[in-house]
Amino acid sequence: MPQQPVNSFMFPELSKTETINFVTNPHNFAMAGLEFIGTSGQNIHDMMTFSRLKSYEPVDCLKMLLEIRHVCPTAPDTLRSFPFRNGDPFIINDPAPDVFFAGCQPKYQEQIIYQH
Image 1 (cartoon, rainbow, N blue to C red):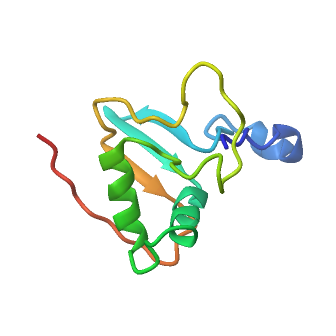
Image 2 (cartoon, rainbow, N blue to C red; image 1 turned 135 degrees about the vertical axis):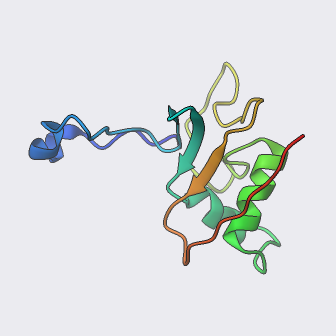
């Protein structure tokens, strides 16, 4: 982590389309006035595998990540990560994103969290 975008050379027809963006994982972006942070879900899977959170739902882990303001708390211990000298790229700065999501989960879940 962070994972680099898939090389567009692998999908030559898709790379010609203006609506396709090859992006990093995790990725933060803005759309329609909202801030998003998304991951492919390795961070959630790793948290549930190497912690006492096995009985938690993935949405609970996402909520916990928002509370501690960190996308990948298990990196680099159990989730591979590049070493960084000048800060931690996985810190979630204030204000928190409007939408925080993780893909590749066993089922769809959502939860609205109100912040003060």
